[in-house]
Image (tube, rainbow, N blue to C red; front, side):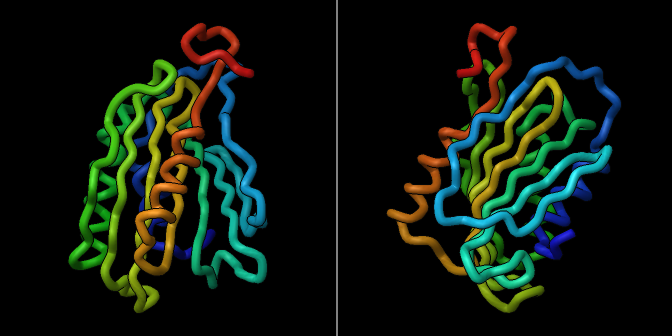
Length: 182
């Protein structure tokens, strides 16, 4: 598993909050293709699944930018505000001076969603700044987390570009009129 503090923190938090809730079939993740990115890591087990993309020539151990998607079946139906708040708190505990900015807390396609940004001025594990955009989505079958991380402070244009991409990440299900699958 990658050693990024946010990834470890998210997995630890998911295991700590896990509950056996019944799942419904057919929930799907809608995510645009990440042109120019390569899969650097992929894993799945009973606690969840993760996929991480890196820029060409980089790895999940040595990256300048990283895109991660995680699904935690044991957290299906969990309020994303609870998960997001605890995740931001844990990142703050791991990195002195971390700032968190809530960007969105509401509904998309009938599901609760939280989008926030964390800024770690000096990641103790890497010795460089780390900024991460998170989108946490409440699903019926899992709690889903999409994130974009930089090992530098992103400019406004870059952050806006990724906020637009994250806005297009969502969930659908054939039996949900408010969230039909294409």
